[in-house]
Length: 537
Image (cartoon, one colour):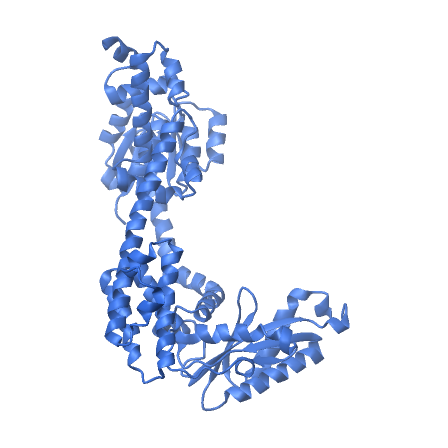
């Protein structure tokens, strides 16, 4: 392992310098990245220095070591804390133990004792990292989480957006035996107790949560001799993906499912309705098969429940070869939103390239409308100016009516997609600038609040503190704490110049509960105390 970062906190500068000078930090496995005179200053520096270990005195002005420890564990739980105490006080030690302090040491500490403690901490840190990296342990955890990971992947697969190559890799990784099929069929299963049985004679009716488990078990038993398949739970229903190859047929599968519905009614006293979707010959199109299965199940109120509803039986069969599928749509939207331009060009080229297919003009027009609808939805979703994006005030359908040639459509789609991408990029920049502007305004209006923390500000902005801190530093070049301190001190200077208020009143007006700490921060910034600053004016 490399050197771990350590920070020292003690109100006596001589003590800090002495410790830094006497210890062979590198030999102990550490580097000193900074020091602080008190807990308040330490908290300000933590975000910037990111130490692995904080060594702090227990008795300090403004904020003692135990309070500092408590705040560290709240905000940075992975940081180890070592407390020095010049007092053999059981109460202090007891509180330190409750705060999970790594070491509690009585002063004075000699070099040998301190070095031994540091090496012990380094060993513990090494072991923690090794544990996280331990391959066997990771493998055990991986195996334990496999069922959840499989289910998550399968839900993503039928949700659309996973490329066929990725899907194939994951099916192999999770040992899901449905690869190498001629086509796949998705079915969505809905199960509930039969109404005619009322409370029911089966114990399943008393424990409804067991119904899906029983239905799943019956399906696995009945389908296992017939085909390769996977069954899993989605957010709404149970889902089946069946592989169709030379040893079975889609028609035969539907017959098997019908038989299962009858068995469930007879044996389990459970009404099972299955929506069977259209087949797909590519794993990348699994989302379409799933959606058509959901649509089929939606006909339950019309067709009736307790059996199989095949989408082709209730809706006209679409035999078109030119269709804007979910994968192409996801790729185009991702390219437009996240760029760069080369990625947009590749997505547009792929979409336009499919228009070489020899299809009826109505299919061609439907394809163009589907693609145009996707980009228009993006424009509406982000409230962009449609005329600016289209590059004209012409009627939307008038523009599409001129897309008779593949090259015309390619150029139009490329131009529109790039303009949307540029507009979204500008919008993101504006959003960040507006966020910083709002944050600054909030600070200007609330700097007198002593509880004005980054967490409180982020609750107002509805943002995460980590993201806000990153964006704030990027946009302003300062950390949040540094900026807030600057605002408070500048306001303090104004009050010192324009009023006769006492120092403790000015401290309270600019957000400092402790007059002494205000004076400390002021002197650190301007080189003199507030009183001397006023006297020099």
